[in-house]
Length: 221
Image (cartoon, rainbow, N blue to C red; front, side):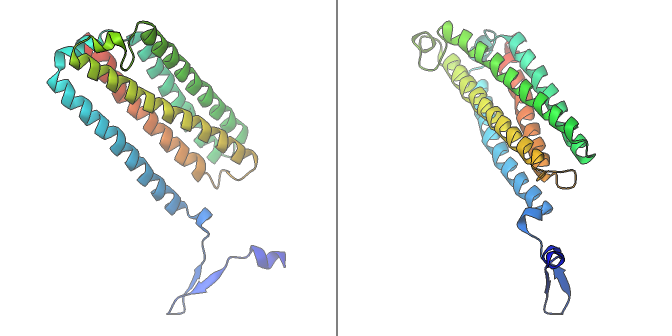
């Protein structure tokens, strides 16, 4: 009875050729393709924002450069290093999982979570410093500045804030995959969950690689 329940289900096409029925949870190609479609929508979202930034940077170049020079490039650079390092550990965790080194994979995921929290902590202190100086959306000080500077900081808080939300989502997903690994639902032979999270994390770090020079470096030319 047990052997029968574990045997693959077979269906036959019109020509009588047998085909194994694949459960949607075991559809590797479908899971990968579906996630690539999701990443494409994310690229369109951030791509549209980058186009908006480029348009207004062309229109108000001097104001954007002036506003950029007031940002803390050291904190921005630190966060860039933290995020790139977290991407390394995420990639290595996937390699460890596929090599059935489960404990090593889990440790590297925990390290990635720790680095992600460090990124958010640095961004929190950076935002708090700017807010303390009266620079935040619709503040009296910001509204007294040139229109281009207002646009710059509006885009800065919007785009870095949205990126921060993606970091938080990534942390939640990593906690979910840790639970899945512990329950042996995600294994070296069935690693699609972690593969997709690693792809998502690649997108997160790639977006920041563009955000950092746009917001922090243009004022240092």
